[in-house]
Length: 359
Ligand SMILES: Cc1ncc(COP(=O)(O)O)c(C=O)c1O
Image (cartoon, rainbow, N blue to C red; front, side, top):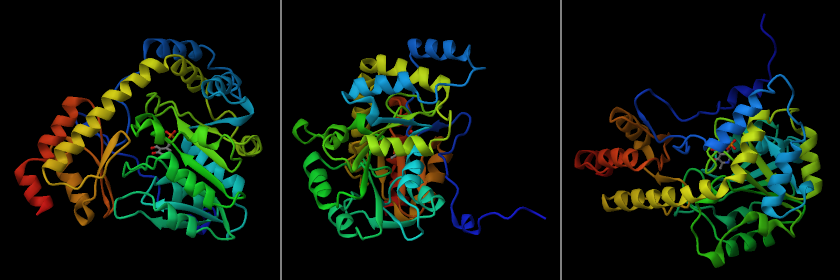
């Protein structure tokens, strides 16, 4: 006889990571192509020597480094086993009753519906605009007395679209102060919006206790394999996050690597210029070939291919490039190294392929 498991889990789709295949180019998981810098690798190697000891559960040194980087008090910083763990913990600290609602745009980061259901809350999904961006007015209008948490993914995964500072502030002004708004900025470092409209959630949230920002070391900082992300927000919200945090879940290697990466941030962040240029080059080439590609502010581009998405993904894999199809919505393609992107563009802009998928 097998154990009784929560029956509602049957309806939760398991998180589907991007595919890998030996020998294939992987543009499916929004990773960076560079391995850790020598100083980061050294910090990891040193941390390994203490692998028999538990890590610092409060991640004091890392939190202090993040606080200094953002010029905030350390009481405003929490870390998590990837920012995805923080997404789940945010549902845990805000939702208690099955009628409690978590609001987010759709399509957006695929973990949002999963963490909502795992947290026994109700997902309220607001369709993206025709331009594949968050419909912030519709989201504000969808707030009810049951809304506890709102995820705003900016730039949005998987469509790449981003809202500027003024639009975000207008939205935040329309949301009641008792609803926690999470600005998920996993791709923040790739934003290239004009300086006067640059949406820095940490700055926007400084005087707004109901705003919390998520950032990650997985993307621009290149530590996806070590699992560390962080939240910056009101101390009361951060204290609640610390209560539901799985003890020691941010491991010693991750903490050491994140501290070393922050120290080396100038070199790491310089690389994002190349990624942003490649993303723009890919978008331009694909548009010239006839694809619809919304403007991307992240390290990927979105091809809204509808029903043809899965087939396009298979055809690209057969051509040696793994991309990420999302149901019948579209395909996300990460900006990798120039030669990898060239391989994808050679496939996608080939007249046989455009004839098949754009005809
Ligand atoms: C929008 C968004 N938020 C959060 C995450 C989680 O990143 P991590 O758990 O690696 O920090 C991702 C990863 O793909 C993402 O796309």
